[in-house]
Image: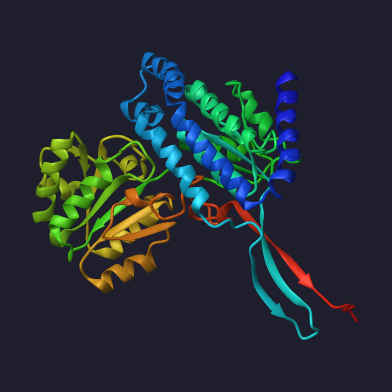
Amino acid sequence: MSLQRDMEEIGLKARTAARKVARLGTGKKNDALIKMAELLIAKADYLKAENAKDLDVAKDNGISSAMLNRLTLSDKVINGMAEGLREVAALPDPVGEVTGIKKRPNGLQVGRMRIPLGVIGIIYESRPNVTADAAGLCLKSGNAVILRGGSEAIHSNLAVASVLNEAAKAVGIPEGAIQVVSTTERGAIEELLKLEESIDVIIPRGGEGLIRFVVEKSKIPVIKHYKGVCHVYIDGAADEDKAVAIAVNAKVQRPGVCNSMETLLVDKAIAGSFLPKVYEKYKEAGVEVRGCVETKKILSDIEDAVETDWGEEFLELILAVKVVDGMEEAIAHIEKYGSLHTESIITEDYTQAKHFVEGVNSSTVMVNASTRFSDGFELGLGAEIGISTTKLHAFGPMGLESLTTEKFIVYGEGQIRE
C-alpha cells in the first residue's frame, strides 16, 4: 500500500504543478532552461561521480558495450544535455499559439489555440540524458513531468533531476513540475500506470519488452516508441562511394541507439560491385554481417541470416543484409519487417527517390542520408522526447509541438443558436 500511496502523491503533486506550469510565461520558462544548462555544466563532476556508481554495477552485471555507452554521462554527453536545453529555450513557444481563425456565416469567429497536454509520464531505460531532454521539453511546452528511469541508471537520473530542480527553484518554477520516481521497485511502474486521474499520457522509451509491458498495464493513453528496425536501401542508381559512406555511418557511428541501421537492402543490379566495397569497411569496424543466400554468393565468408534477423533490433555491431530484386521488393521487405521508424534510399535517380518516399510508410523517410539523422536535435526540434512509432497523436521525432494539443476558441457578439 505504501508504494501505491507514494505514486498517488507524486501524481497529485504533478497535477497541482501542471495547472501552474501551463500559465508560465515564455520568459520564465526560458530562464529556467538556461539556468538548468548552466548548472549541469557547473556540476559535471558531481554528475559523473553519481554516474560512476551506476557504471560500476552495470559492469559487474556484464552489460553489453552498446548499453554501457548509452548509460555513460561523459563530458560530451553532459555538454550535449546543456546544449539541448539551450536549443529548446531558443525555440518558439507553442503554448497559446492561435491558428485557423475563420468567420462563420453567423458572425462567430472560430479558431484553435495550442495548449499543454498536462501531466506527462515518461518511462525509460539506460540513457540518463533523457532525464534532461524530457524535463526541458515538458517545461517549455507547459507540462509537468513524472520520470521513471531504469534501475541501471538510478543514481544518474536522480543526480540530473536534482540539478534541474535546483535551477528550476531558483527562477520560480512550481515545485512538482519535474519529478523522478526514486524507487527501483518494478511495482512502481504498475502503480504509476493506474493514475488516470493525475497523468494525461504515458510515453515509454526503451526495449520492446518495456513498451509491451506498459501498453498492457496502462489505464492511461500511451504514445508508443517501439523498436527501431531501420533500413537503408541501396538503389541500382546509387553513387557507390556515397552509398558506402552512408551505409557504414548508419551502422557503425553509434550502433546502440534506435536510429542506427539494422538491415541493409541492396538492389541486385549493383550488389556485385557494392557489397565487397562496403564489406571491407564493415570488417574494419568489427561488424558481424549476416546475409541472405544471394548476399552469400558475393560475400562467402559471412554468417547466414535467419528469419528472425530481419525484424531484429540488434543495437550492436551486427547487420542483416539482403539482396533484393528492385525497389518494390525492398519496400515490401520494409513493410513486413520494419517498425515504422526510419528508412533511407541511396540513389541518384529522382524518380526512384520520389517513389521510395511516397511508398514507404515509416515515420521518417530519407534520401541520400544516414538514418542517424532521425533525431529531434538533428531535425531542428531541439531535444526530443523520443521517436513515436504510433500515428496517433504524434509520428516520428517528438518535439515541443508534439507535447501539446489544440482546443477550439470561439469569439461571438451575442449570437444564440436558433
